Image (cartoon, rainbow, N blue to C red; front, side, top):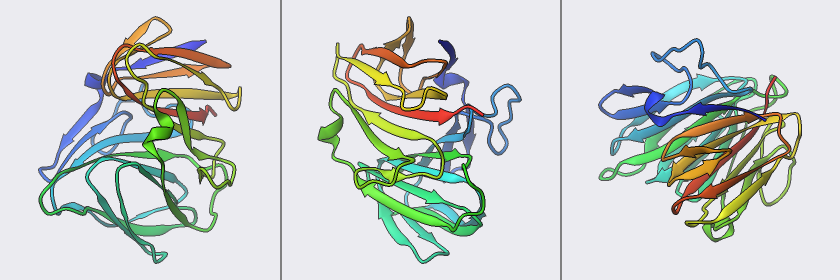
Length: 236
C-alpha cells in the first residue's frame, strides 16, 4: 500500500472577506505543481460563507461536483431549473456535463455556512447536465461506513458519472473501522472532518487527509469521536 499525507496546515487558503476558503488541491490563486489532484479527485474546498453572501451565477462543464454542508444552509439555483436549499446531513451532486450555470448562496442572513465542495473529473464527457440531492440519516453512520455517492443508480445513494464512491462515517472514541475497496484499481482519499484517527501508523487530526493506493482494504482507529469522509476514486 502506498500513502501520501495531506496536512491541514499545508492547504492553500484565501480570505475574500465574504468567503474564507481552504484548498486541499491547487485552486484559483493557490498553485502547487506537486499538489494538483489525487487521481480524478481535482478539488476539495473547505468553504466558510458569510451570512447572505455567496457565489453568483457562473458556468461549469464536464465536472462532477459534490457539495456536503457541514454547518448552515446553502441556496442553490441553476440553469436547468433547479432551485433548492441544501442542509447538513444532505449531499448534493451536480453533473455539469455539456454545460450549465449555477449560483450558491448562504441561505441565512445571520449565520455562517461551512461546506465541502468537491470536484471529480467525469467518466463520460458532454452528458446532459444533471442535479440531485438526498438526505442521509446520521444514525446510519455511527461507528460504520455510510455510502452516499456511487456509480450505480440506486435508491440509497446519489449517482455520479465516474467510478467513484463517497462515504461518511462517525466513529466514536476507540472504535475501529475497516474500509473495503469497491474497485481494486481505485485509490482512497480519507479526509478527517473532525476528530483524530490513526491509519497505517499515521495520526491524522481535524482536516488532515491521507491518500492511499494499491490496497484492497484499510483499517483505521478513532482516537476520539470523529467524523470522516471517504472518497474512493479512479487514479488515472
